[in-house]
Length: 80
Ligand SMILES: [Zn+2]
Image 1: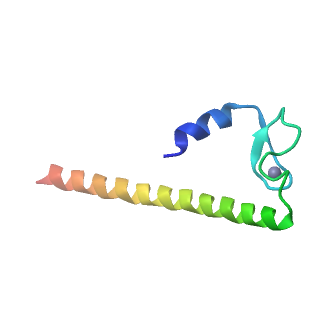
Image 2: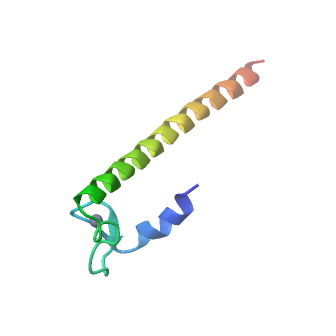
């Protein structure tokens, strides 16, 4: 689970890179994600980030369904 490592990063003072859209520390001179990438590397990075976002949305939907199933099961048990 990547959440614990994401949390401190969000609490840092950071800004969003105009080029790749990722966040990086405000005190950094340039974006560490895309500063050394050419246009092709940047396109690959953006694709990977979009896939990760899609994966997180998928996980959230799965957890929502799981919670609904558990709630329904508990309700069914309570009615027995
Ligand atoms: Zn960048």
